[in-house]
Picture 1 (tube, rainbow, N blue to C red):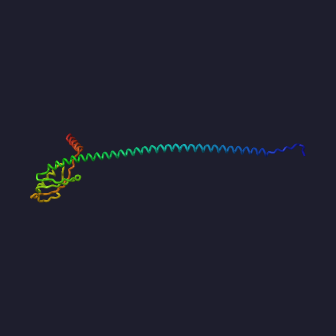
Picture 2: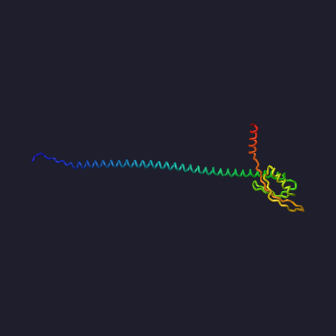
Picture 3: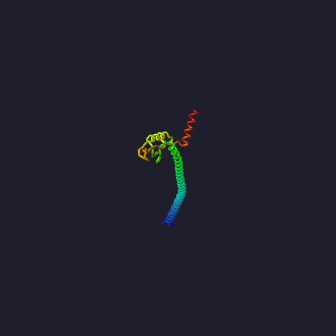
Length: 204
């Protein structure tokens, strides 16, 4: 046996220490990766949350503006309704004024068309339709009255509905009922348009 000193080196602790250092480094890397992943997730969450909050603010703003527009539309519709009602009332008033003037003209024309010996007892109007009742001394006077109405500028289409000969105060009289129509009158605008057309035709 050699007298040289044999030295035995135990490498096991060194290897264990190296493995431990590697494990620690791997663990640190994993923790760092997890931390970075967590930060990325948190940043993404914050970004998405910010987008949602911004969208919610925009939605709230749009809803508020829509509410204002709806309120304005209601006010506009109410104003239109009031305007339409006012126009309708003005048209009714205008029609009543026109009707009142027409009735005056019709009565005046009716009196002028009455021949001697004819008396009216009732006058009824329903739109353009008219009904006249009266008493005449004879049937011929009723015929004269109808002819006068037929040439009138306010009446047209006189039709004899009923005629009865009855005694009255010792005399025989004819009680009659006439149906006739009110002749449509030209308005001022129509007359002006007609006059303008006549002037143009003359100029040509």
